[in-house]
Image (tube, one colour):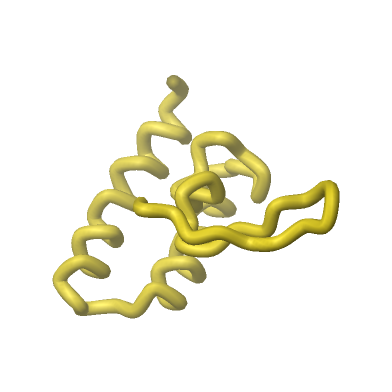
Length: 73
């Protein structure tokens, strides 16, 4: 892991703790994530980004008739 990824992860851990403490909203955290990723040179599609697309509360399943399901994350 390079310094940029390490710095990004460190910064985001602080912001996530702010979210858990109720100091910032989920929307603010997403904006902060984008700004922080840009600051450290991570692309919007980087696997190191904090956005967890696998464990969202509601995902769309592509293929067949489609649909959505709830996860327990």
